Structures are given as C-alpha cells and as structure tokens.
Figure 1 (spheres, rainbow, N blue to C red):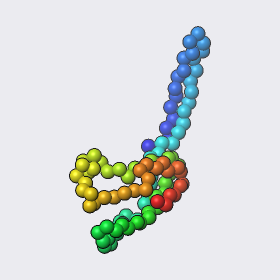
Figure 2: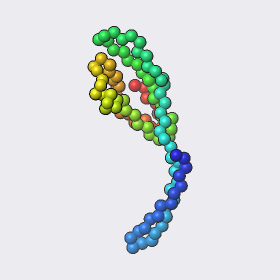
Figure 3: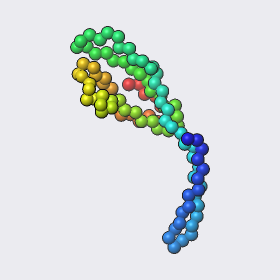
Length: 100
C-alpha cells in the first residue's frame, strides 16, 4: 500500500536492452454503506417489505460487491428467512453511488 517505484528491465532479441520505470500509488477499494442496520420491523406472513440503501465508492479504484451469502449459509437457509437483493453483482466506479 502506498507509493511504488520500480525499474523493469527489457531485453529485445537481437536488439538493445533498456529499462522502464513504473511509478504508482497502490490503494485498496473502500465502500461505505448509508446505514449499518436495516430494521424491517414487523412483516406479516405473505407480505414483503422493501428497503433501500446507498453504496458509495470512496476511492479512485473500482470496487466490486456481491450479495450472495457464503456457501455454508446458503445450505442452512430456510425459505422463511430470505434476503433478496435486486442485483447480484455490481461494479462501483470511483466516486459513484447507487440506490438499489
């Protein structure tokens, strides 16, 4: 993490050798959520409730997210306790927000 400055040597067959200097600032994706808790309150059997959250990419790199639970949680889920997300996978470009 942070600034990187490296020298990469190139060797051309039957030609000259030269070096290429590569400089970059390495960072991690950083996504924030508009709320830490979703309280659906009382939802009667047979009904559903929709809540909206906002995701914001705070960095200058693309951030990917997915709503699919880990394999062990998928196997133990019952049909009465489901979480359904409108999008299963989203790519967030730098400084972009999405409501869904």
